[in-house]
Amino acid sequence: MNIKQQLRQLSERETDMHFNNVEVNPEIIQAIMINEVVPSCPEEDFYGKQDSAYMSTTIPLFRKAGIEVNSIQDILDHGIYITNAVKTPKSEYAVSKESIEDSLPYLEKELALFPNAKVIMLMGDVAKKAFNMICKKATKKNAVPSISTYKLRNTEIFHKGIRIIPSYIMTGQNILIEKSKFEMASKDIETMYRLIKCFD
Image (cartoon, rainbow, N blue to C red; front, side):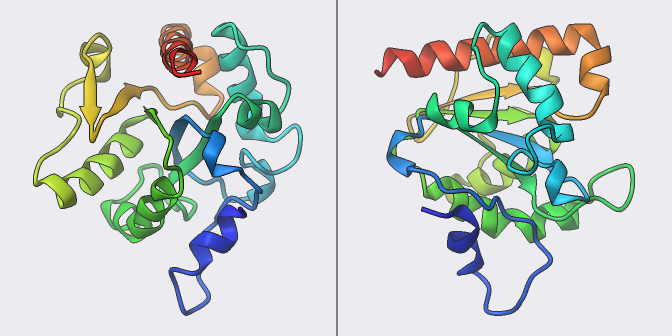
């Protein structure tokens, strides 16, 4: 299944949204990691070039979590799919509520493509906000409480039987500098991996 082709079907008109142009077997995906926003250049995204900016922070996080990976394909082979909540690059420092809302139908459809997902990781506040918007539409309430991520880290949160893990943004050079966030994000990835291994 090609993700880009699936999401393109949602819109009659040509859209400037960036979708993951990748073939995935939806049956094997047990965990979904939602990052915040697509980069301005698709080549720098998770499914872009081999040494893309996004993979330059993602691979160290996985390795720190004890998962030996060298590429996005290795991550997919472990049953983990990575995407971005916002499908258009940000034009300012902060991601606007409007751009989150514009991308929401695509993110919702994307999540629905994976019937065997057991864990969803929310990498950063934008991902948390987008996921809560989806949940609110379905259940009239947020899945993730609006409190600091570090306070939520030891709370078991579920939505429709799926374990939700709020964590920290996994892209941008800051994650490599902010040692405590890097440490916590890698620990969260370790937890996610342990949970999906329980289902094998």
